[in-house]
Structure formats: structure tokens, C-alpha cells
Amino acid sequence: MKHVTMTVAAIALGASATAVFAADFNLTYASPYTTAHPYGQADAEWIARIEEQSDGRVAITPYWGRALITSREGVDELAAGIADVSYIAPIYARSGYDMNRLVPGMFYGYTDPQKVLGVYMDLVEDYPVFQEELGVHVVGYNVGTPMHLLLRNAPLETLDDLKGLRIRSAVDFIGPLAAFGAEGVTMPMTETYPSLEKGVLDGVIAPYEALKSLSFAEVVSYYSELPHSRGAYPSRAVNMDTWESLPEDIQAIFDANTNWLSQRTLELSMEAEAEGRAYGEEEGVEFNSVAPEVVAEYSQAFAPALAEVAEELDAMGKPGTEVLEQIRAAHEE
Image 1 (tube, one colour):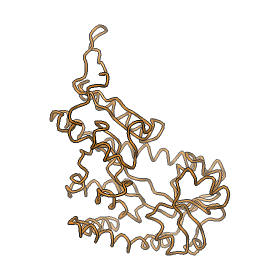
Image 2 (cartoon, rainbow, N blue to C red):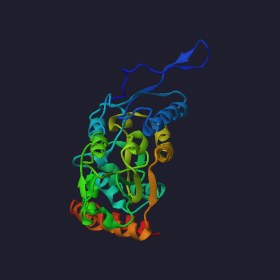
Image 3 (tube, one colour):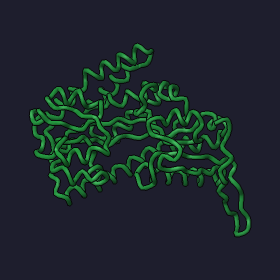
Image 4 (spheres, rainbow, N blue to C red):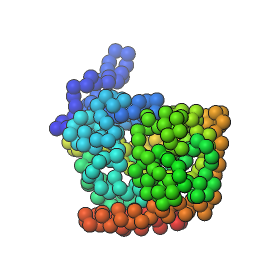
């Protein structure tokens, strides 16, 4: 935005029962999620923290549930001034934001989202290109909780068990599935439940929480813990014109809460995972761990494609191979 949005009614702060003071900076926040979702819940707590720590100088009015912004084009919409602050997900962009969009896939084989977040935050600090290519000021990060195989008819014990299966999958996982004889199918998650129910699909790659949130526990019988890791990515940011209009002390409050927001989002996401697993157990879903050597073999199927991605980034003048090597080295530690 060209200036801090002033059209939203300011939140008044009472110094006494009869005296109130308007905020100095009235900002809008846009998210595709609602406060029922862990991301939205974290955002609501974060907004309250910013307002409190600024002593009421900042007031943030949220717009939830895609009222202002989408997840796929969030960075572009924020940069265009749709809101002052928003949820962003450059990993879903069709093009651009190359480091932010492509590096998360390099975390294949990781099973601890806290470690993923730590490694990623170190990379962001070491390589300014992550911030520079976005054109907005990042104030929070997300890390995906690991996804596994939810299957209709039998658990996965070895990679031979993948042969002939049709699995709903993100594009990033289609190659490794094919390497072991499975067909990866891309479709909206909203279409996945009926496809599982009818037997059009044999399974889906999804996290524990999907057993409850998407009711997959009703149409699968097995949850095999073959990790499909998800890296971290910038998830909340401030429009650059808005950011530059804020005084340094207010900027410092936002920056001081970046780690808090990132960690709180992870905490709430993990709580949702636990609730999803508990629900699956109640519904009779059988859970099985997969042998470490099987997990390691499957993870290596990701390596060739990600090496090519790193080389593509190198060709753009970006540190693709260097970042990939750091991510893989941290995985071995």
C-alpha cells in the first residue's frame, strides 16, 4: 500500500472508564484461513500480542476465510496492497519466488518439523535472496508437519507394497511414487474423500490431522508412517510500502515476534496432528511404523529431481546447490 490503511475503524484503548485513545497505525490483516484452523488461531494470538506490545499504537483488523486474499496468489496480492499484512504461501505460486517456492522440497527425509524450521531459519539468515525475491517484509514462517500414506486395503510394510496403487499426491511426490510402481494422482482434496470411498483411489498422502479435519478416517483403514516431508516457507508478511511507513520501534515489535509466531503456529499444528491421530484410533484406523531402511530408500528417490532443481536455481544466479548441500548435511547430523 502507498500508506497505512486508515479506512478501518481504529480499536480504542481505554485509559479509564471515560477516556479512550485511537491507535496510531490501523492495519488490515488478510488470511485464507479462519480462527478455527491452527494457522488462524496462531494469527489471532499474534495480533493480540502486537497490539499489546505496541501499547495500543497498532490496531490490526483481520479479514478471515479468503475475504481478501487467496493462498496461491497471496504474495502478489499483498504486494499489490490488498491488505497491509497477510498470510502468504509462495510454495503454491505457479511461478516466481524461486528460492522460496523450490527449496522446501529439498527437505525430503526429514521427520522432525522443529528441525526443519531451525535449518530453514538459518538459511534465511545466511541468504538474503529469500527475503529479497518476495518484495514484502516477512514476519512469520510455517513448517509443514510430515505427511504419510493413508491406505484403504492394506498397510505398507515394504516399497513393493506400492506397486499398482493409485495415490492422491502433490506434484512433488509423483516421481518417487512412480519409481516404486505407484501412480500419483493430483486432484483437489475436496474430491479425495469420494474417490477413496468409491475405490477410485487406493490411498492419499496426508497428515494425521486429515483423518479428522477431512474425515479420511471414515474411508481408509490404514495409516502407514512413510514420511513425505514438507519444508518451511514464509507465511506472514507486511506490504513493503506499509512496512516502510512504520517507525523503527514498531517494526522492531513485529520482527521480535517473528520467531514467536513461527513457533506458535507449529505448536498448534502439532496439537491438531495429535487430535487427528486420536480420532483415527477411535474410528479404528490401524497405524504402523515403516522400517528406517525402507524410509531411507524411499527418501533417496527424491534426490535426482531435487539435484536438478538446485542446478536450475544455480543457472538463475541463485545458490541452489549450496543450499541443497547445507540441507542434506544438516539431515545427516
